[in-house]
Length: 360
Image (cartoon, rainbow, N blue to C red; front, side):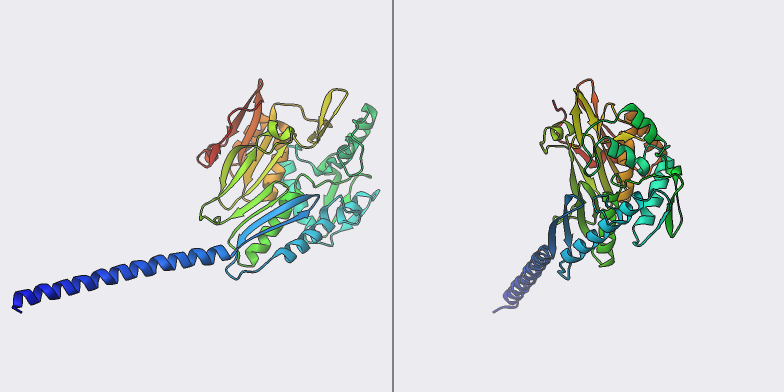
């Protein structure tokens, strides 16, 4: 074989070898990616359960493949023993039955919710107020209370008991400055419980999760597809009819989300609708165009409290509060002369997809 032919042959062999190595490396890389996807998928968990009179759903990824269901259920039971008005022996129930005096905390949960409640109470000029408990019961929205609007004299007597200034607290105890004052954390406790679960997962080294309890959420990292968690926002008109229809979808990026609305808890008496959202300042259920308020905040407890406050104050005041609190973002669905419309915080517009423009 002449030298030229040898060179051509050697070049062909070298080329074949290079191509073979390239394809082998590409194959190995593809196989490695497939293995990673399979491993990732096998590390995903979905937990479901009941708590706080509602349900919860948790999705998370754990490379150690740990099942946190027993720990989650235990945390929720401990939480209810502190802040649930549906548990007669809970700390809050024991505080509420006191005529006067003080309760010293037994759990780590009471003080943080008091601090956040005071913060939002002051920021909203009293629109969010956990001392609203007597009014909640009077209107029939408390455990065991009949759905019946109270008489005017009853309201007049109860209004004196409403106001965060009627209680005091420090790092150890909470006390009543006025006899018969009661607390109701239902407008903030579910969001707080979601944060408690999120803190637990983070402490275990879990970085990708979605926690939903009673409609309040906290998300971190990415979902199973490697994308931001996408959460549906209910159409309030369809929800009042018992239908679960999304009005919009929002992508969450390491945030908490809560929605408040008057489409689930209400009753009709003598042709008048009484909603569970009661204005602490007027002692009456709200009646305005805002149908639902979805708030996104750094944590679910903050989102929960402000969602309630926005439903109390209505659309325009909610928008003004948002201007004062850039850490909050909101999606507010309201009735504009029979047509559903939505206000979207500017910082949220790129993350919202509206899937339903009108509802009748």
